[in-house]
Length: 499
Image (cartoon, rainbow, N blue to C red; front, side, top):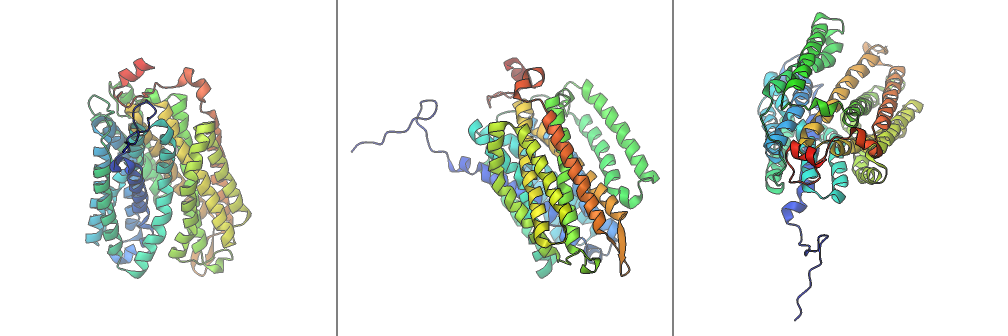
């Protein structure tokens, strides 16, 4: 009996089937990204009832959201750098474990202080996406990398769209602690799956971790984002907010000076200031602002009482279902984004995504009374977000050495987070200044919502302009940072010599 002849691979050697673990790397990492986004949104349906459930004030309860935002912003670039130096799978597993521990703490306690601390621990999961993207760069061949990175970037929107209705259903029909027991189980599954299916990357950055730089960045970002997130509640001209902004400027200026003079900095500012990297970060900040306004305003708009003349009076469950088509669209369009980036370049994909976001807000401005038009506009914005968010990591991957991909993508995610925090504050300011009384309650007017849409539309167009300003592949020689193509190149000096 004749033996089958093995089919030769690209290098001429027989192509062996990939092990099961290797085939599951992408699905497992995507599951981690979706889980991270779900964990960030599950608390939203609880916010109206948490003051009663925890015997605390509404202002105190708001820290369950603020704590996650702050810790995520601080830890994302720090854990990204740690992943580049000590192993991406190791740090990724640790981030998911912290998220799971925080979920268990929420499930076991009704004390608001414990809940705030637990939510701060969960903020570590914000580093899951940049770490996963860096792993994909190290582990996948170039022909598979684009679609995998696009899918990983889309998990943020997919998880948020799934998490809101899921959490609302659990809260409505079960004890609210049940929701956190469920996420604890999913978190433990994610930790085990990553440890089993993901190979530790051999690409490492040598040297010592910049502890001083990490502390400086943590203090500066905390002051900045705390001032932005609490400015509406404390007063933008209050001594606390002005003091936080002054402290943020002072600390971040000193941090920048320290980073430029440190031999092995937390963030390579020489790399960040290159137009290919710096403009990508600017585009990320603007895109984060434009995208986040959609989720904020849609949820409030459809839940507004019918007595306003425009509100639909929907429940939180129905509100989540309105955002669900956007999550499905993000899943479907992630491979489309990868194909556009492969054929036209990621900066064109980013610019196209920003233009689509702007078109979505035009739809919102044209009609925000009919439910189907609201869903259509929100879905168009989600589609543009998919294109933009999928292109941003690809731009970073093409512009930085392989040994710095996790930290560079961590900074990019940080810029998105700052954009989202700024968007939240700006939208709240606009809606607060355009209200009318419905009974005895001040409710935002439709004009206020339309102004918020117009503001987000303009910011989206600015993101598109920033994208088009990024040097293209033909302009690389003047600006491009050296890139390590071989996965075994782990040190920066080798990458520079190879370039």
